[in-house]
Amino acid sequence: MGKVVGETEVMVGSMTSSKSGVVIKNLEVAFGSLEVLRGVNLEISPNTITALMGPSGSGKSTILRVLNRLIEIYPDARVKGDVLLDGRSIFEMDVVELRKRVQMIFQIPNPIPNLSIFENVALGLKLNRLVNGRRELFQRVKQALEKAQLWDEVKDRLNAPAGKLSGGQQQRLCIARALAFNPEVLLADEPTANLDPENTAKIEALFLELKKEMTIVLVTHYPPQAARISDYVAFLYKGQIVETGPTKEVFTNPKHELTEKYVTGRL
Ligand code: ADP
Ligand code: MG
Image 1 (cartoon, helix red, strand yellow):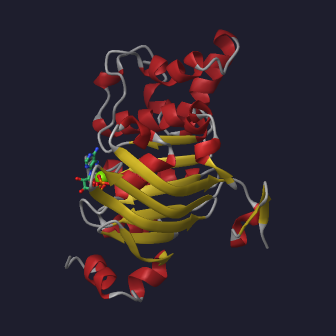
Image 2 (cartoon, rainbow, N blue to C red):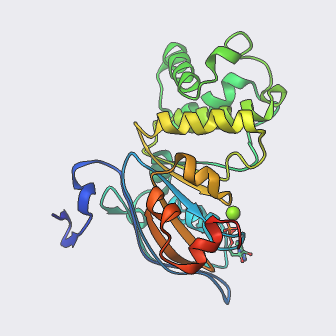
């Protein structure tokens, strides 16, 4: 089974029936003379959580930055290869449109601290003229906060500054801000690394809900998190994917020595 994209037949296997899988093809990234991704190939199936794991510096964040073309803000970054979203090259898309479809959250929650909780979620919708009128705006913001499982905690103080929220709440606010765009892909770069176990558990449970509606690419340097919530893992080492497969398989029966060392905490 293949999917016809222009003149090219692209094999996407089981992904042909669903929308918005991601295919990374021969991706190479260098900063000046430093090669940080050296031929990465990966298929990310829709409606899954795929964990990118690997030691610090292995290139995990760089992969995410390519997937929404954030990499283009680095003047010395050179990118080769291709990334297909729903069968189309992201490099042929309008970058603003791409970033609505592929949203990202970071390790350190980054709401605008002096702006209200409501406005943090509303701002992107307003700037991109995605809503008509106050009423629709309110509904969209409410829906995003509900989906991020934050609504009940903030509904009585929507005008409070976002900076007053706890770290875990701020991260869920950033997720709400991302969800306001109804993205097809959510990129999460170590989203719980700064959170306590309780808030980490909340966000992990939230991701398991969200994957019903979108594709999640989760970067983690903490293998137990990948084991708990991901469907697939890709283990990255020095800019290359050493091993990839269903999470259970990779954790119980790693094929590569480096993977085995990594998942058992010896790397
Ligand atoms: P990870 O997220 O796995 O820790 P990164 O993708 O952030 O790894 O980084 C991979 C490598 O690329 C590291 O050696 C890092 O120092 C280097 N790197 C990342 N961003 C830049 C940049 N803007 N300029 C130069 N080198 C960079
Ligand atoms: Mg990183």
